[in-house]
Image 1 (cartoon, rainbow, N blue to C red):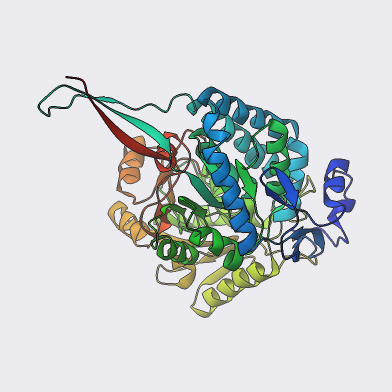
Image 2 (image 1 turned 90 degrees about the vertical axis):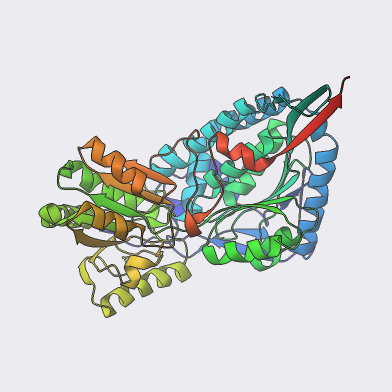
Length: 502
């Protein structure tokens, strides 16, 4: 279900004056060493409103020269002002930034919605509140990064201990689906551990990163601690990965780019963490609460238009309840209201770009060509924007739509009969980011959760998030973990120190 045509989503009365003011004026600049500057080339690019295809704002485009300046700025801050700030003060700065994000939540919710297409109902309950909590959680860790005194047995008398030190200059490359939230997953632990950061937001959705930069300045972070260089991957992203003075890359995005980063970072042994794709299974047993299942499936595949690495895009349903679950899911999918994200009536917005819309529609066509049965959706939605209707298809494991990450609102549904069989099928993928299990039998839920090869398993829920819970995948879904105390391991180096005291 989709509302009519719009000439400009900025005409919606719900859009705040501060958002309109932010989008006005000349090109948005880069943040380098505490100053907003144009790119050296003065090239610009536009970010588009996916609900209409019309430009939202123009930005200066960073390239190799700008990245080099940003990295030099980060190195100067790392070895200068930032190194002299106490852990407690780092924590206070992170907490102050969280407060400022919370104070400007309405503006940030709307900017994120306009730039990505996602409903403001989602940005207001998920993206922005979780960003606030991420900074607050890691603000608390700034004063708790301790080492150990070691009970060494080497002959003699020694004081041996470890300490945690910052990795150094961190290059953070952020995707377009959760621009602000995933930026916080990288910035908060990096800064809490005493690193400095060069942040490259996606060229498709850079607006909240620019606004975040303004809030970072307002919070009082020293110049150069965070630098922001919006630009394209082949120029700005590649320059950041290959820069010899960057100590670590943290990347969220596609497997293809992740592999390129690993190869490039290997030249000088940069530390790398990667959060990559997923083809997550959602398994429904016959004893599940079927009313809860239908709502959970909506959250698993249609939240954020399905543009989620953990999207539950493969649903396995026990044969005994297969028809009932399928009917409930299809009926709910048919009622989803599509429209521009800033409209509070919208339940699912447009996809992020025309190119991505065509990619998703191409997967649907391929599914039909391979014999999948279309139950609902399958077409472009109404309006001039990049809308794809919520789509449910009966499929088989060997079909492309059941194997490859679509990153859109397309659900492949398949029946199963035996527990051992469905676990084997669920694990038969090169990905391993997340999974869902639906059953009233908690013993069975735990058994299946332990057997699934995935970084996060939800039992009787989906897409549940908290800053304390580590996030990352098995197999080709990535290296390392973000969020939780486990993230600290990736932003610190452990140094051993021996003192001869005999």
